[in-house]
Image (cartoon, rainbow, N blue to C red; front, side, top):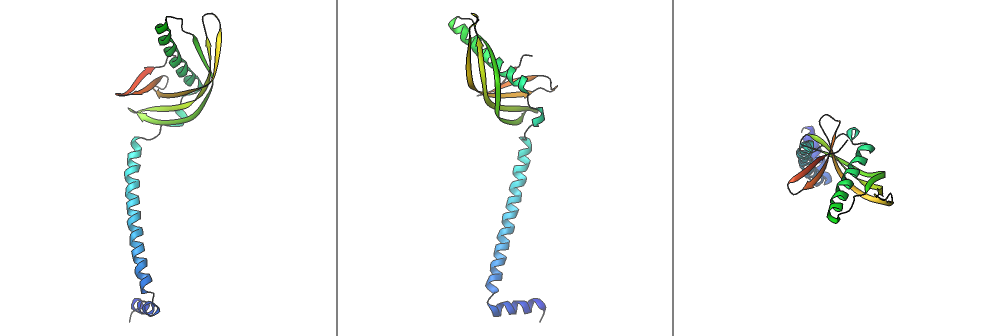
Length: 167
């Protein structure tokens, strides 16, 4: 009698054969689960490469964020002033607090999604000013290939609308 046969005989005598069968079943299930998990990691891992996050070290600085908010506000107040036939106030965003920063690539260029709050001072033609605190912002900013200019993006039904930020 060989060694494995002796061990089987001992286990059989001790009633442990059932435990050995359970162990085989458990090991098979574990192997199957690990293979499935590995497949999922491979599929989602490769899919994740297409939507990888852009490097945070290239994210817009405070001056770019301030310009983007000011540009959006100027555009909004100019449209509003045309509607009511009044002079548009001059917006001055300040105390910008970025609370979330996400990133992704769009057409091979990094896009940064920033959300947070800012304080706003509106200066009117009459030299009167008005302060508004804790205004929310939600910006999508895309760095251009040369790395010197930025575009503001807005999501719409057709995809993305893009506007160059003024210097």
